[in-house]
Length: 432
Ligand code: PLP
Image 1 (spheres, rainbow, N blue to C red):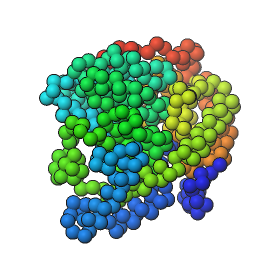
Image 2 (image 1 turned 60 degrees about the vertical axis):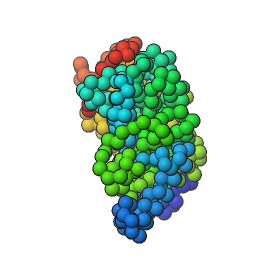
Image 3 (image 1 turned 45 degrees about the horizontal axis):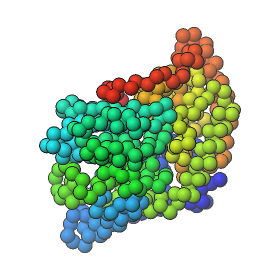
Image 4 (image 1 turned 45 degrees about the vertical axis):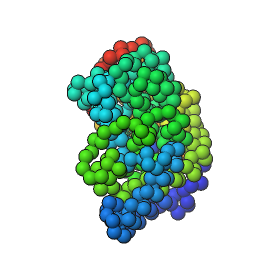
């Protein structure tokens, strides 16, 4: 079924433009919703004023971004005054962690905790603060890809300043028990941040119900433009800005606002609120059809991560004895775009840190593909991918088996989960 939110005209344009290619990489980024494209383009042309200027042009721009602010606030059940616009998820994550660390340093708290499956925007920020003398701890995940609240309780100390655990994981889609984790962090006086970049716009995200102090989101993950995001800062939370300069965003984030992108973010937020439940059901059914089709038609496949607790658009599947990068390229040659995990790690053969943290071997972590669906995805596309895969996988397995000591020819024990590293002081992975 096609999305009822995509008009025939827009689909025709899309099909013509992309020559019937299939895009199953919505977690990397999404195409713009038509309404977003229109509003962003209009703002780029018409709202050129600097939102800090007192004259008519400036006030027009300010009104436009304030409208966007209200739309995002409504989407996540926040007050507009708590919304701080940023350039996207990476900046929001940096701001959350560095801003809280700078604010809390004088209190003597010098410890940061994040889950082992966070995006690099969080992991590498912790690493950078580690170099500045902060103690950092990675919270392990179960084989399901979900963290254990009890493990968090054990890892917290009286000097923990901040806990950062993502709402939905970008590679496997699993959802974390953020509200429970936030309550535990607060018991020990720590702040709680959640990276909701992959859940916002796909499932209901209620910043207050999650019980967090800080929440990151990014427009281009839910049909909005790149270069626009938000850090939600709960009123009263102690934070220092990381960008200093002018007084924009109530002195919390300096720099002239990117009005067209923020207008697009606002429209994307409004659309998401309107179509979320229908789209989540539609896209979830497509994802399930894809997943079941692959598991049925391709032997030696398995789903990574808890299937019951995921965002509806994502599946991550291991293909035994197939190098995921080769499969990705073979699919691309057939016009199908997928990913081996986070966009930032494509182009390298490094095993996914997420799957490694779940206890899977390096081989299995390199045998896995992420399929993420969205606005333009249809049954026909799902069926085409399911029909293409058996022959491609068979061919690649044939090639692999001819490379005698080659990649992927391992006994099944090598691709089954090993016991996880449970060292609370475990090392943060190297930047990719
Ligand atoms: N956090 C998560 C979970 C993500 O998936 C991404 C992007 O892939 C980011 C943060 C970074 O967001 P942005 O691309 O807007 O910088």
